[in-house]
Image 1: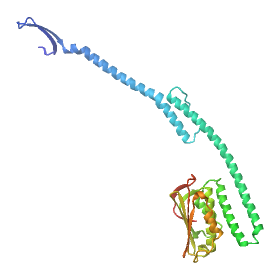
Image 2 (image 1 turned 90 degrees about the vertical axis):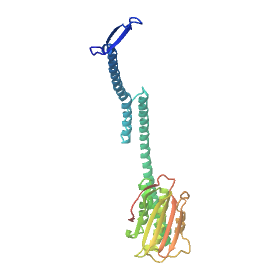
Image 3 (image 1 turned 45 degrees about the horizontal axis):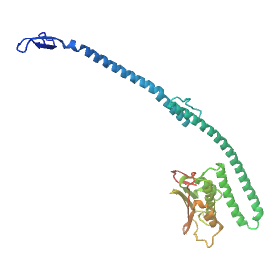
Image 4 (image 1 turned 120 degrees about the vertical axis):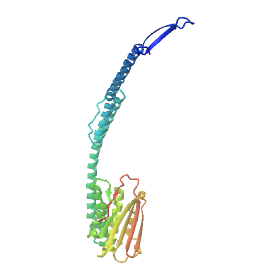
Length: 327
């Protein structure tokens, strides 16, 4: 600190080793460090400007060459999900992302071509199914016309039973063919099978989940229900005014478990011989279904149970369980 209060950098040199006198010279620290301070400030400003420019350029380049192409690709994918099959990215190869966009456009073009081909094939299949439905109905009509001429007079009771079974089969075929061979709900199958037998729908209660059955399981189930309905209207609970039938079903471990319970009818007893209906119930389902059934002839009415596999057919679907409803 000099006498005038200025901080200085001093250099001094003694006159001799033994003399107390020395020569000194100095200048203020502000003048000494001014170039360094200016360089520091200038470099700091340069670094800040460079970082800001780098950030701006990175945002621009990222948006131009990365985010924008990716957003275009995602937008096309979302449009396809919404059904806008004509959406395309319009990208051409040049970098990796544009190559991906170009490949996506090629894939979408191929999918659109396949969709058009599938639509044409589906239209042809629909025409074939309709023709098949027409021929099947004509076949049933022909069989129904031939049957009475063959044995209606010789054995009226057997003819009546045969005619009812044929009508139940035709009704179920109508149900399936009306949906062009698709799966049918159990409720619809039961309704078609019971329609010819039950006049008062309040006597039949149905409860179970909304299940879909493929045609190869819907037809056997319809015939089984038809046989049960025929027997109960002749000998079981529906032959009396106070009788009722409860039908329940559930899907358990890939199986459909179906229970037919009769109450309020006349006393029942185990039959002494096996009729055609019993054989039909046992053999109606295809072997792959692994069907097994049991009949308990209780004093209050028949309890019939049948379980069969509903896998691996993908048409077997389970929806949330509905509350019970009267059939």
